[in-house]
Image 1 (tube, rainbow, N blue to C red):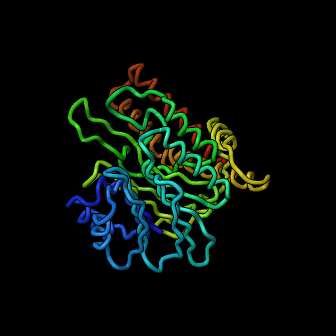
Image 2: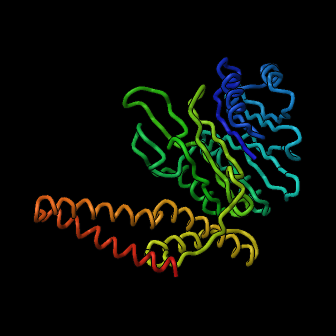
Length: 348
């Protein structure tokens, strides 16, 4: 299933409908969550009539010219029960054929951190019910310095600490992304230009277990100052390589930190549920670390051998290498020995 979540900054403007239809045409989402629609009353009715007949909808009307959420889902894809308990989110209980229900929360958090506390409390109460849950949308807050560029210097303010505490306390996992680093830009020029990652997807460990092949993409920023987010519950291929803990990881000290950090995350449930969820979190972190940091040791060996060959070729041409190049040669030689040892451990 694909979920499109977009802070469109006004669904009545001329550019919205053509851009939205283009997104649907390209990505074929089953569910669309539109935030900051700025629609209510007759204006909202006029826009809803433009959606294709196969879409069902649920609406949280805007307050004046701010806010507003529209949830759309294609008929027949799944059984969907929709409601909202505050103006900052729409909750969808999704029951797909031959699968247990799970919850999608479409979030458009308030710009006022005091109002956001209501959202954090509502979500915390819902997560405690134990259903697999994913939360997607515009949180109007960042977690850390790396999620901001430009403008005033980053400060670890109260609202950011509260956001981090909400994520940590509920054992939620940021699903990461592919695409642009930031999801919002103020579109100003020069030193006044600011980028932030305000939009994201986070999920419970149960949801990760249910959909281990998920993907999150930041789509190009068009017709709004926010990127649309595309969340896919399954990768293009249905095959999922089984998880194996590689003994070679133990030769890298950082692996211990990965396990320790994942195991220390708070999770809910009885004793066995907590063990199961922590194992799942640990597995996912090790997989990502192996992919991003450890890499393919076979390709790495080829790269080291190429570097050694290049330096030795230069030595043949010029005779004795300068001391700086000799130092450069000793490094790849040592790395080559280390990677060969990793190969031996891997094959054993």
